[in-house]
Image (tube, rainbow, N blue to C red; front, side, top):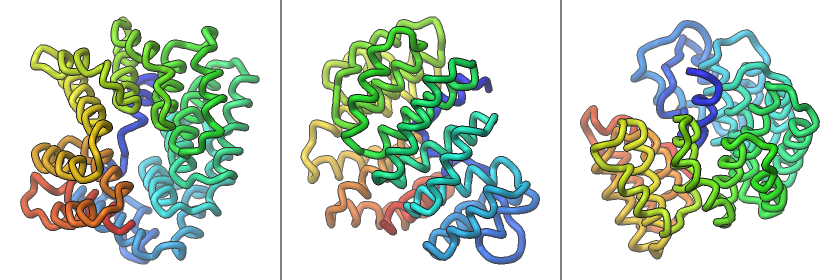
Amino acid sequence: MNKRTLIASLIAVSILCLPAMASAGPAVAKLKGPAAQTDQYGAIFEEVLAEGDAAVADLLALLEGPEALAAKVTAMNLLGELKAKDALEALAGILETSDNASLIVNAARAMGEIGGNRAFKLLADALDGANANRQADSATVKKAAILGLGLTGDKKAVNLLLAELDDYNNDEIVRIYAAGSLGLLGSDAGLDTATAGLDSADPSVRLASLRALGLIASAGSEAALDELAGPGSKFVVRNAARLALVQVKAARMGNGEKVGFLKDNLLGNPRASELVAWGTRELARTASKDAKDALKEMAGKQGPEYSALRRAARIKGRQ
């Protein structure tokens, strides 16, 4: 997978897809060493989460050590899930100095999920640095920082993102990422840019456009998404379009209706990793009794087909 394709997968939550890492010892220590069976990974992730803030120091030490890429990405996901503000400086260092696209992306994503003024400032500084450095590698940092800014939920990011959207010196995919992050912040300013990207000859741009349209969640994109969600599209395009359609439709619903709609879609597509990641997160954000009950029900579903959904529902249900 090249860097552009990897970066185009930012909105998917990688905790649902990473391989297991395990060995005997404390929870974080189980992320070290040789890969274990995949079915062990969920239990390890939840075990670390159960330790809460007590696990943060060990997770930071793991980031600085020689561990495998999968272990470091897992540690970043955990730090984001734990809202570990003490991790922001270390994550910012990785974002700005790493030469590994996956580490850059996941560092920015974790920073965005941690949120707060410091996360906003560090991500904004990383974006400024990427703009000042026009070398090829800076494009990866720029796209990652743009995603992180959207995930912070901080409205101060809107003007920064609008500047990237309106800068025609940027690559098309950078502008589409800005459109998607503006969508995360409640703005549809990038709708035309994201829609135009559907006609690109570059599959990474088309995929990024689909994901951005889901985040913008404009009813005006529903017809195009519906067509791409049909059987004539390639598998990855079809899945991305279907997720975007769910996001567009859910955005028009009140909390009560939305909870039932999301629950039905999640139970009907328990192996759709991006839908599972987004849908369980959205239920957790809704925070109503019905949403919590839906997560609890899904966390108790039996059968191998529900393994990813069951794990995500347990993780999000703890919030």
